[in-house]
Every structure is written in structure tokens, then in C-alpha cells.
Amino acid sequence: MVNPVCARIIKVIPRTYNVKSIRAAVDGPMEFKAGQFLRIKLNNDKNLQRYLSISNSPTEKGYLEFTKKITDSDFSAAFSILKPGDMVSIEYPYGAFTLERAAERIAFISGGIGITPIRSMCKFAADKNLNLDIALLYANNSVRDIAFREDFEAMQREYSNLRVIHVLCEKDTEFSCIVGRINPDIIKKEVPDYLERFFFLCGPPSMVEAMKGLLAKELGVPLGNIITENFQGYQ
Image 1 (tube, one colour):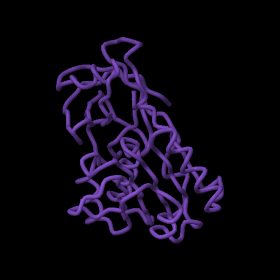
Image 2 (cartoon, helix red, strand yellow):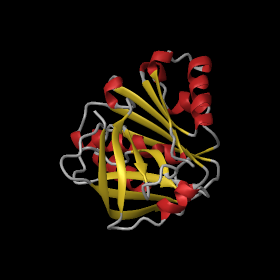
Image 3 (cartoon, helix red, strand yellow):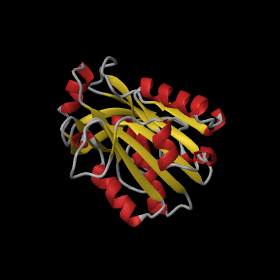
Image 4 (cartoon, helix red, strand yellow):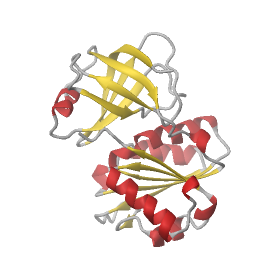
């Protein structure tokens, strides 16, 4: 059931030079599944609304967090100046991009700000110490573009079932990563049991479609084992 509510901003968190997280509180219990998304409307303006993934886990109580890359759009301009005490309209939860759809072996493939629902699912799995084997391939241009870098580093220290592989376009000698773009060879090397896993794909629509084709056509992953979410929060 989708709940339309008014929410009060309680915290603004810079994640990278061009990505912000907003935490908002609503009256009553905040019930959602890790990986779901919400619709947010700013200034009661129907032209200033977007669907954004919920980036916190249900285990992180007391707020809903939504995270966005700041672009040149009117929505981004309004989003970027939100501050504690401001009110926004929210409808949630939406979506079936959730852990219930997978088995014990999971591989996430994400690019850029598409990491938001995956951050929610990984945090939920870590906090609940779920019996999952999780590999995350996370693509970005450079180290400074990695959202939630510290969160994932902390999760890996506390939850041995999670392994994060960063794939960057730009080499950084001080950061452990693979240089290039996600391709069949990288998947075969880093996720050798790929035919035994469920793949969750989230990122720019062009990337999601490319990865889906790569997995199904080049690696033979059954389409039923590929779960997609075309992230809608870029504009």
C-alpha cells in the first residue's frame, strides 16, 4: 500500500561533490522493503517531482533517506537547497527491486547514483546478518564519484558475505580498483560462479540494458535470474 505523507527534512548529507542525501521524518511508522523507491514532490509543484530510490535500510530507523545526483534540472536546483525543517510531499513505497526476488547468491551491478537501492539492500543484509553471498560490481568514472564509499567499506568489515569490486574509468594508484568498463571477462574473473547467481542491475537505463544483454547473450545467464531497475532520479 502506497502512503502519501508530508515529511520534514532532518538532515542533509553530501555524498560526493555532486551527490546529496536527504533524510526526512514522517509521523508514524516508516514501513518499506530494502530496494524500494518513493515519489517526492517539492514546493507542492507537480513539475518538481521525481521517483527516487530509498537509500537507507529498514533497519535504520527514524527517517527515510533519498539520494540524488545534482544536475542542471529545475528539480535538482530545488532539491539542492533543501535544508532541515523544510517540508516535502512523499508517496511510498513503490517497486519490487527487493531481496525477496533472489536466492542465496546475489550479484549487484551498478553505475553511478544507481547504487542507492543497492546500498539499502546491502545495509539490510549486513544489519540482519543474512545468509547471503553478495558480490557488487560498482562502476564510476573516478574515485571521487563513488557514493557511499565509506558505508560500503564499513559493511565489508562487519559483514564478510559482502564483496565490493570497484570498476573505474580513471586509474588511481592509491585505490584498489579495476580500470576499464564492466565486461564479460571482468564478470568471469570476479564472479566466477555467475551462472549460479541472481543479478540485480541498477544504473543509467543505457547501462542497465547493456548489462542485461551482456549477461544473457554473452554469458548465458537466464533472463529469470536478471532483475532490473531503471533508475529514474537523474534529471
